[in-house]
Length: 282
Image (cartoon, rainbow, N blue to C red; front, side, top):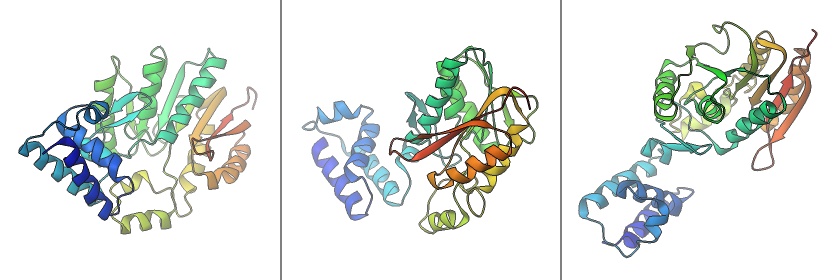
């Protein structure tokens, strides 16, 4: 069987299973099985694959039909140019979250005296590790309520960095000591109804990484309150959330003493990252 024939079969199966991106997923999974890039795959469409490789490919296609994300099937997801290990213990990093990393790097560009950062709700560690990779001289720590997320975080630190990032198991910032120049976070921000709807269709990501409270705002509100006590004067809170939550979060941040609050849009031109600064005198 040729690579082209295998791709067409995979695409057809995924199409009739109503997978959103059948061709893309078929391509990525076959390239994974063959251990080649997608570019090499398309340059080799007339090449033949053996029966064992095709059988493995069909097994991965079957998993995708059951709703398992490609990133979980491959146990990898690219984020900010790095390849992170992921599985069902953590949320799959989204491209929109790269905007949060961009915002933090922009702050560092304007304020070179900033040296201490903390990443709450770190999950796979994509934010903290990407920033440490870009700025190895910074002190960056991370935390998550999930011990299983901590296991994935440790794997990614070991795989991607030459240094260590301290990890703390903590409910938001409750068990984090000290203060920081920047606290960044991508906390769970889906409402209870949204999470229940996702569970009904078999969504495999951990519920604790999705549920932000009944209205999706409760965890973010608590995080803002806690961060206001743990950010140095002149420091910043940088947080991802739903576009629908931004006006409420803006009011909460103002109430907690943050100033210069701004909102940055994601790749789809939707409000995605909110930033506020603690004044020098409080």
